[in-house]
Length: 307
Image (cartoon, rainbow, N blue to C red; front, side, top):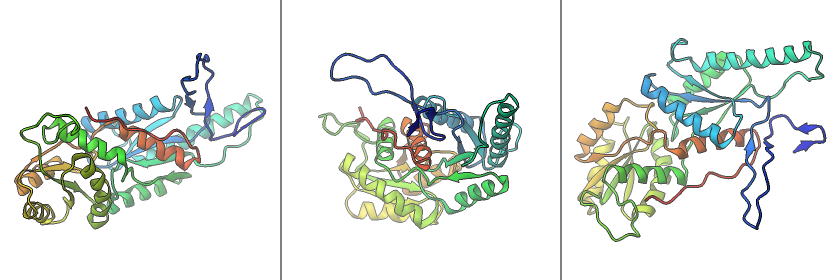
């Protein structure tokens, strides 16, 4: 809520816009208030130029949804030079907030010492991965900064949409099963490849059910980091009648060596789609985690039909 003198700390403000005539006026866009906690994307895996480009695009999508957002990127395996670590990014955010407060007070402004979290950390993970999440938590603790840590992005219907898009881009699924056209290489069974052990497989299975409803073919989740899991699921799908399988990575990308995906596809004897990457829904879901952590209820991210 807003007070008579201005917006409450941590809540979004509405930007004035010209009113449009008629009943179908465009909704007013929310904007991040000054002093809101930083949105920090925690990026797993070995940093690279491709990883940085992906993370920057995800943050850019989040900023486009919430103008004024203080978006930052911290790497779990960074080097504090080209790829700043999550710990150093959080520490820097805390230093900047303290400096802004001291400058305002020195200028005679009647300001209160900032409270609440310095940042909200959002792991760039589609599903739960215990080892990576422990790394994130440790990095937050090492920073000695008051920061909230959100859950991972999935399961969510928008991730099922993203998987559908990646499969259709690879020619492994019909873009729209309501249309009467065929794809010669369309799969009749999907292996949803996750990392993070059994917990990750179960979480991926929820999104897999949503994907199966979109494609009208069986979808089963398997673990890339468990020996024999991919082969066992491939055998199970073929045993139930699927003849042409496809591997759909339930991964954003940086969290795993791409060679593991190639090896998994070879093990299953099938083609593979690309990882989710900077699909627009990833940025929207990451922002939704941030706003939820702050107790804000923005419009929920909506998907679009695959075309």
